[in-house]
Image (cartoon, rainbow, N blue to C red; front, side, top):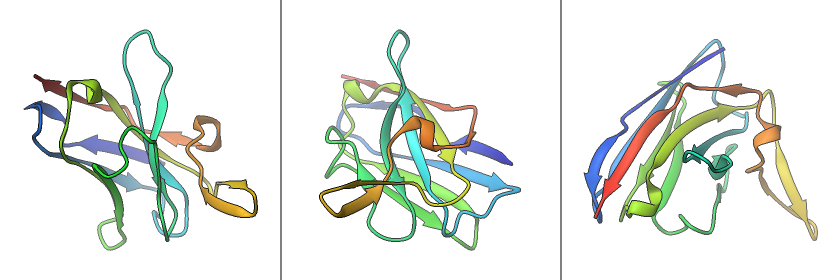
Length: 130
């Protein structure tokens, strides 16, 4: 399995960016995939994840980021709008062998736990300046 991210870069606050993750040796459909980010000195945090239906988002990105899959291209995307300097990080694509969910009170959502994912890309840097 190989996950290759692209699309990172440097933007100004308020601008948008879309990062992509091309998967090989892996089928994006019906499996959990997600985006995580990490800044030096801090733990990696889950940003967004999706299986086939409603995605999960970290509170810090809800309403600004959108995760999606393109089954024909076998690619995962993260559209990031209204970027702020706090979004500056290395962004990693992650994939799981199957479905990974977090259930609470009878409601289940795609997992944002790092340990639930089996494969990782090398990361793409996103830098947002004020």
